[in-house]
Length: 247
Image 1 (cartoon, rainbow, N blue to C red):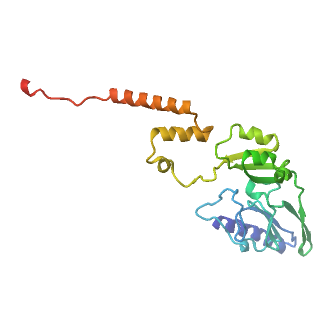
Image 2 (image 1 turned 180 degrees about the horizontal axis):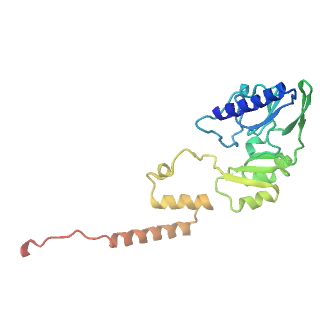
Image 3 (image 1 turned 30 degrees about the vertical axis):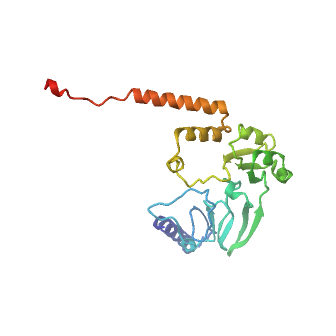
């Protein structure tokens, strides 16, 4: 916060000089900073510098109003220190935010009044979850048809062309992920495959990508793996032997 403190010292010195010269002015400071008491949404970038990530609102003492940027939701830290937030949401984590601006009036004594004006919602954001069939047919999701949509699919098998299917109903679907109900995303890949045969791993992969293999496909897997095994064994270098009789 040393850089911010140094900058504000210069601002206060300039204001004091104007007062001494009989030319007082109203002062509004614009700053891009993370001030103590502000609540982040998770979509803001880190702005730490020199190990300092936050500064107190008192750093701005001595000015009439401080208009802050960085956090994406409108927030009041003190009567004179506020975030307006972003005019539009930057992530689905902001889907519950109501965007706004602050309209303020300065009079001869400094800050006169501050009013919040909510901004119109151009298009809502929604995060929905279910199988492709549920999301594309159930009436419960009708209210989100004109929203920007982030969908989490819970089908047992990864659906083919899922985004195209979703966009037939949700024209503004822009994010998609697949999560099987029993999936444990915390397990690393090597933990998930430990102790499983090559055939089991190949079968599981095909099931995830499309659907369970048919009997003919399983037989093809077995023949292919057996062929690889034979080829691997045939290319191994035999252990060298020593002819003792020739020694």
